[in-house]
Length: 411
Image (cartoon, rainbow, N blue to C red):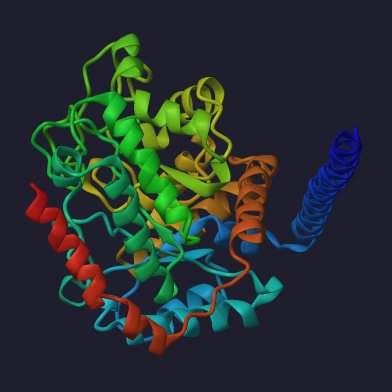
């Protein structure tokens, strides 16, 4: 009887202790939820205040991402950040010679942005897909092509490679990687393969790997380049397939990731290819039917939409630069990507600016995209300073090389 009383007493104490822990956990969860609501409310208030303070010129600038020449901050990119209020930059080989140098360049650009109106951080982007599409190839880890990962790597290895890639990019001050490629293809080295389900699963893991080291990925090239045999860098083309076919195959990986993941953690890059099943006249990047009706309406995507490079032959042979920017924004794009020539960047900027002043682009449409950009920046870009010495240690370190080599050995 005595043992039974002791047991019941201990049980009662255990229940009390468990209840206390459970109550505390609930209080912690509630506290975090309340803090999250408070942060969201504070960000919303700050965004509204910024929108009211920003000039039209500042708003137009935030909708552009540009390339530039040189491994140091040039007069041209400085002017674009200070005077045109450009919201982001993209790096190519011409900007990169060592991890330490890239980190210093990123810091220099961010410092210029921080000293400009409203101190908005810069989006610093790159195309670091793997395989042939690697910037500063000799100085970073030898990332496998997506085709090789799709054929030979486990889904967990897909995550690890993306995380490794993102870690290297982050130490150099890069915060956006225009990857993964979700185009379905049997032959393209940039593609994860032909199976829509596998491309979706592997693409999702790639985004998770990047996100877990604070890098934003981008799903490309919506609604899918895989069926086109013509390179949009050179010329336009059309994908002749009906809507049902496209939505069950090419669009499927985009649709699944959009429905399952936080849309603030990845961009969607829209291609310059035409899809007559949706829009008989305009390429996807300039099509309201594809961006607003399909991507935002049917697929419910709420994040940032970026055009592919507006200097590609698929569009610049048929539209002027001042017209392209206007058409892309009217179609629903948020970011205009102009990768190479300073003169083209100015044409896109000035063309959109004049179109708004002339009433050809509604101010509400500009504010809608600027609000998305500001929301993204305030939620995702709290830390932008890179450590050049750390970059030199982390990028292409022996452990990373050893891991990637082990993937080749497993094939």
